[in-house]
Length: 330
Image 1 (tube, helix red, strand yellow):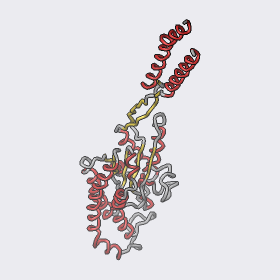
Image 2: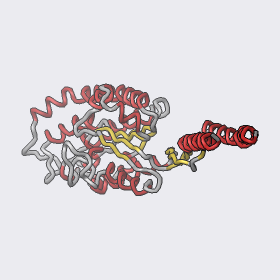
Image 3: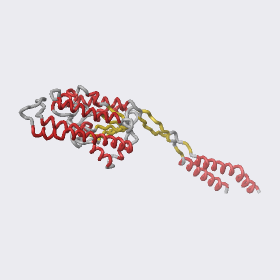
């Protein structure tokens, strides 16, 4: 009888002990890291952000041209953050996109999930709203990459007369539309992300046409108004300006392909834009939380079970066994 009781007690104690071991837990320790590079960054906008004209660029792939400023920064931030977290760059820029196109994309909801997860959104938009209008004048004047002055033999007078009739109104309407779209874009992006929002100003690639003041002067005035909108609404619409225009001023012949009658930045231009974007992004603080597990320890339930088993064993030794011995002695 005694053996049966001891065996049962031992089995009970073992079961309790095993149950206690299975009821261990490990505390999750969270650590917040302050960073000066965004772990997740998104680029939006037009062909400038997409890397148009660079080696490796294709219309449906923004990730294969290593010299674009978006990809330069992807490589830089991946290296900088390697010991803390992975870096993710998403580039949804579309060559040829206007501010209206970008707004339509934002309002479609297609980017909602990506925006919700990003730490920084960098936007380059508006060039197609305005520069296309001015470039039509350049083309009508017969300007080519081989002849950067007016080509009297190739002037399209019909086109010029037609353009001049509506040119000022067209550009004014484009500016008005951009102003409204800019505010809505900034508001919409901020509603869809907790990340920081940045908007680039637009350089004037047509500054090189000093022999064509109708082009260089008009484009300067137009882009000045354009960039003033970006500057004016910065505080009210919760974004930070990245002043590409100021850095490119007087240098567009070396930083763009305008000498080939292409307004887009060349490799040197993208390198400078990357530096300017990085300087602005790095001036702010981003946060990344990591989770690690502490050493395993018993839960309260496990401790109670083990304590209960010990009490049972003590009871057997102190109370039940002596009584059994007395019974056998009789």
